[in-house]
Structures are given as structure tokens and as C-alpha cells.
Length: 296
Image 1 (cartoon, rainbow, N blue to C red):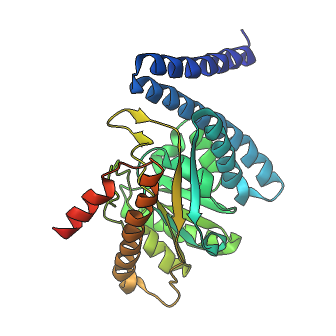
Image 2: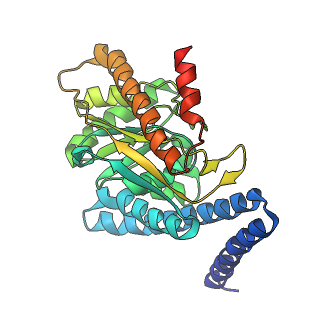
Image 3: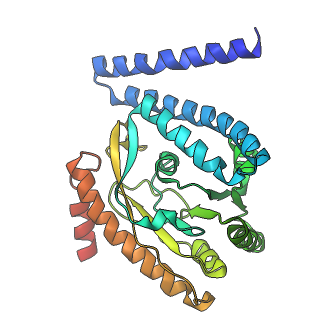
């Protein structure tokens, strides 16, 4: 069998298995089967779009538009996931913040599904940061390397600072923005809460003297909860807050900057999760739990 034949057989198997699992889930009332179906669909979409991204990155670099590589791939992933899983992130509160170039865009990080969030909100001429080990992941690593991802070696502070220094220069030279999850890892939270912020994104913003644009995604634990093996379709609301300027700030101001941005995002997270509850996206008691814990 040729390579094309293997690809066709794999694609057919995926397209058949997804609706089959959904039908079995409906017949047996076993949500874990829907979880499996959408998980297979998501992983397949990620591989497909990463392959597309490698090709698109090469072409766009050749014609002088390499900075658009991650944006066009993100959009492809958005629509592929919408078709296969019925999940979509929708910006309900938006300023002109995402048009700021260059800038540091920061967002809360809940689950692996946040890759789709990037697909829905990513502005043109933006790239992500990622841990350096991801560059060795087949397809995804090649795409990231070709599309100007800023790889960070988290085991070495010196290497991380060098990467940020290079990123600051690239941001101004190519008017390229960078998206960073300041929590540093996925929270898997089922309430509207944030993990403590790491300072890297804020050091980079101050070093580059560019604004910080906070993006807040409502808690979506009723759409995806990895621990409970729940994966449903749904529209997840997102807010884009006003840019926070860093001109004139120094490294001595970073701690206050982190505190200010995290406070603003935490407050917005509670508010927009209330919107999500009305849509059935977040748990009905999510906001009440968060409010009680804040009062203690």
C-alpha cells in the first residue's frame, strides 16, 4: 500500500470511529464514549493542522509573510475543530487590544483545549512560547520551529532569559506579538480560579517596552473536564481586556505589574464564568464556590 493509501485508510477509520462512538454514547448513556470520540477528533485535527502548518509556514516564509504562519494554522484548527467537535471559543467582550502590535498577550490556561482557544482568538503576526521539548514532537515541533515559536528552556534560567532577549528584538524588528500563558501550566480547574503567575511574560514586556493584553477565558469545565472524562460541544465565552502599558517601567516594577494583571484577570474570570454558566458551559456552582473561598 502506498503512503497515500495508508493516509486514506487512517482518515477513513477516524471519520468512521467518531460518529460511531457518539452513537454508542447516546445509546448506552456513557459520556466516556463521547469523551473518547471528541478526544480522537481533537488529536486528529491537531495532527492534520500541524501538517498543514508546516507546508503553510514554508510557503509563507518564501514569500516574505512568515509571521502569518501561526495565525493561518490557528484558523484552520478553529474550523476543523468546530466541524469535528462542535466546540468554539467566542470573544464576547473585545477592545481593540488584539490589534496592538507588537505586544504580549497573556491568557489563563485551563486544559489542552486552550490550543483551540488560540485558534479562535489569535491575531495575525503573533506567535506562541513553548517549552523547548516540544520542538521534538513529530509534525507539531516542525511547525512550531518554522513558524517563529519562542522555545523556552525551563530548566535553565540563563537560557530562558536569552530566549526572551532574542524574542524582544524580534518583536520590534518584525512587529510580531507573542502569546504566553503566565500560569505556566494547565490548571484543570472546575471553578473560576487562577494559578499563581510566573514572571517571564512580564519581564519580556518590560524588556521590550510593549503593552500587555490580558485574555480571559471563562471556566469551561462542563465542556471539558479531563478528570471526570467529560467532553461536550459548546461555545465558550472569552473577554479581551484593555492593554496594560509598560513604557517607562523597569524590572523593579515587575512584581507590581504581575499583581495588577492577575487581579484584573481573576475578577474578569469570575464575571465571565457567570456568563458561561447561563450557557451551560461552566458548572452551576462554580462561581458560588469561588465567592465563598474568597470570603474566607
